[in-house]
Length: 79
Image 1: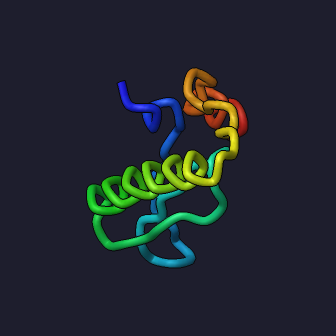
Image 2 (image 1 turned 90 degrees about the vertical axis):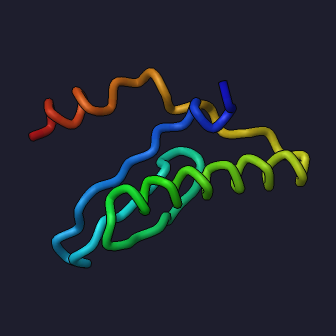
Image 3 (image 1 turned 60 degrees about the vertical axis):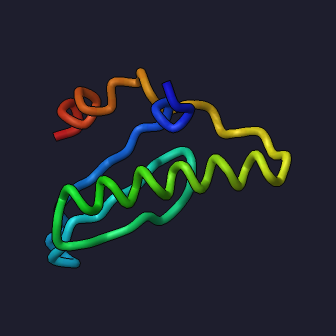
């Protein structure tokens, strides 16, 4: 298993931007956007790998993993 699998990746439609937006909360701020859900997911996965590599090259500890926190069900509780 890749270390990147330990971080939640979110792709959602943005009404405001009229495109899909990808993010990885807990690992970095910002993200990526595009017209295709699949392309945005692939890009956010690539960005997660890059972020992990950058942390390692700079000798910084990685933020705590975000997997296993059941974000989907927690979001349902909010709505």
